[in-house]
Image (cartoon, rainbow over all chains, first blue to last red; front, side):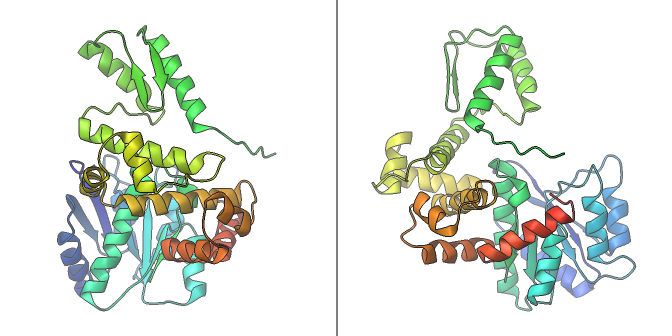
Length: 149
Length: 185
């Protein structure tokens, strides 16, 4: 609900893309807190801290150095504590195979990363809003699969 | 070994509420969809006892009136979509307004303000969730699902499924199958 804070975590290695996301999220009409990590290793260290507030939604870049998004996703889904986390994976690929691979490996949302800012805002709004419905309306998370173009 | 179970949320929820109320010695008059009637006011201590007792089942006591209205609207929508018969033939907006007993315009504005989505969108999300469930758990085909959820045609259902999930129904099913094989469900 409106008074509740929406925690968003972003794992992205590219400085420009981080700014791009940050700006898009700050323009959404939600009361949100955004945390940013720079790669998969940092991401897992962050999530594995004992007292950390787990995010409502993780935006996870597939292509990152040190530990890529797919590997991080695997670790998240096989951890008892993290396995129910909502994960939105994104990459510049729109190949059907890449989409299905990410979703079959446990991503809830697949985003084909756009290069234009307004489009990115629209996509983030959709991801955040649909995820919120799963979070607040008792929808079955096992069937939570969304592909946003 | 693997057992497949089916459940009725309403019955399960009622049983839990009954059990918890009795557990905390709270007298009640009735339990109905989303509402419990008590003969007396609850003391703050009892209120928090009950509220904590219900939390572990994912049940929350709603304390603000606006949130209660939103919840009631959501319940009417879910009840409408999850019952066995077809959807009502009257306009859905009129149906919701009558059941919740507020003007649709007011409910629609409140809903968008609080839930980050419109009522129309919420209904579509719920219908597509129901379609997923009928597809996976009851093994219905698209023609049967379209009929059950009052879509004018299979094509209309397919289009709305694709628009809502970004996937065709068959791609969705294939991903769920792979997930199961990967043990991620």
